[in-house]
Image 1: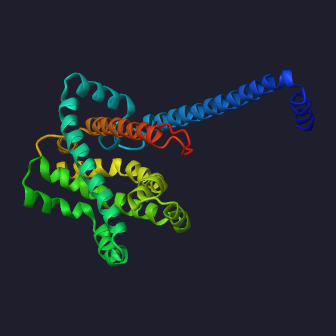
Image 2 (image 1 turned 90 degrees about the vertical axis):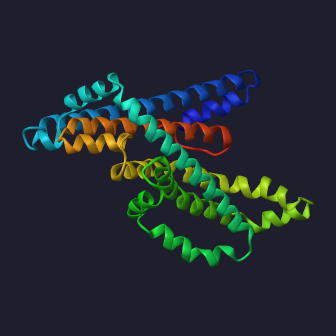
Image 3 (image 1 turned 60 degrees about the vertical axis):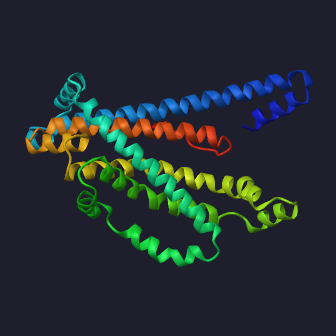
Length: 290
């Protein structure tokens, strides 16, 4: 290592070779990063293979196939519901309910947090009520949503939005609370208007918290829609899972769950792309989900 540092120092003293040293360092860094990604991918493939092999070995030998099925049967069931169109038919309703609930819950959570932050004294006054509402099991609200709003798409959207609202609200409030008062004072002294302070200082500081809330609420919105479909629905992936389980078709249940996983991964990749576009300066780990 000392010899390597010495050689770089010597090369830096030679103006003509400075760019060559920098290119060599960049190539070494890229090679190490490529090796790290290859190692991680190999470990992931190995763990997945061990999991599938253990599952296949346990199915029918340790655990009854009625309860566990096996990877081959699940793959066949998944292909069947893809080819006959039933997965796409039900997935479009679940996706619609999830997206509408996600947008409704996230936008209302953001606006509520910003409004609370702007009103002096509102945050401590509302905190007990917000925490009480957040602690309420959302799944217990599903029958009430069905009772109040019927069995259409609306109760699914509302329930999905309740799963999203509180997490986005609390994350946004946490982000707004980390804004440096000294920095805000300096910007104000420089003549910035309150709107400029919020747009240029407060909001960029809180955005990593907001994006984190938006990311972790993707599965929550899907859970809200699925739970509502479990209770009362004649379409959607929740209905598909419920119908398959009532007929003891375990492979179909796992195939529908696999369809939901693909949906969550696609939505997560969308949020990651939005994060890279919106917050290019925030360092982040490369995620296998995008």
